Image (tube, rainbow, N blue to C red):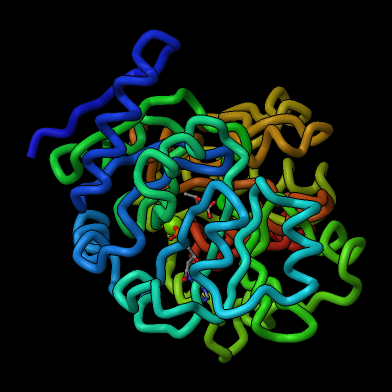
Length: 356
Ligand code: TXA
Ligand code: MG
């Protein structure tokens, strides 16, 4: 299959959206930008289209898709009821980087929900995305538009790297704004439960609906419990290089990474370092990339997947990364980074103090 890659501007927009909408209504696949990451769109009410989505991504079919909508009317039709707290959360955070899980209505096929009786729904805060949803019939399932196991795409180029030849069209709307996937909040339990951290944080949600729980399996990744969002059990990114997160006081992290890098370089390895604007000048060797500025935490989320893909292209043997715990979107960043690292973490102070 030849994948059309379409640039959107004021002149082309109407025509391309019309064509993309027709592809979706015919059961085809169209990748498109949202404010979080690029999504791989398909008609959420068409089971065949869901199967095509799983195949294109190489994704296990027990991992449900998020249904994207453009207005509240659409929500009413695909869920059994809207709990009061969900209404409050929607009023505050939709459109936005937040997904809510509801009991599904019969309108949603099980192919879309990975066999579950619940459905995850999101209204994205991205003009083009919402116009595409409407053009495609109003209910568009969209997992992140990467091959299963690769970092989520934050640009049309990333989508093409993974999915060119496997989908009908990529709508290029430039680089996305946020860079990590939406927060997932399960509204079928009370108090509601966060199944995946994202830009809408625990504190933000609690300020609107009071107590919110967090899935234990994502707080403690060594927990034996299975995560409640089926997709969270899969390792998201298996880089060629081994990624290790080094945590501790920032100065100790830099010293530890310097020491670890020197050891690996001596062995003849190619070493990548994920630093920040505040620290990159302190590293004296290795291939250093800044992931953003600690004072502007959003910049770190924005660059995370981009930097991981860049290191993949550089063919490094190992990557050491600083940790990012203290920030409000830090939970979301660390959750993704630790997944990419296969939970490999070292304590900076122990490395600095060890005789090696
Ligand atoms: O920001 C986002 O949410 C992006 C953009 C494209 O909107 N989409 C996204 O989709 O991240 P995906 O498929 O890569 O991740 C969906 C996650 C998976 O972990 C899946 O298991 C979980 O949502 N999920 C979907 N439906 C669910 C349900 N009914 N119950 C629990 N978890 C669900
Ligand atoms: Mg994904």
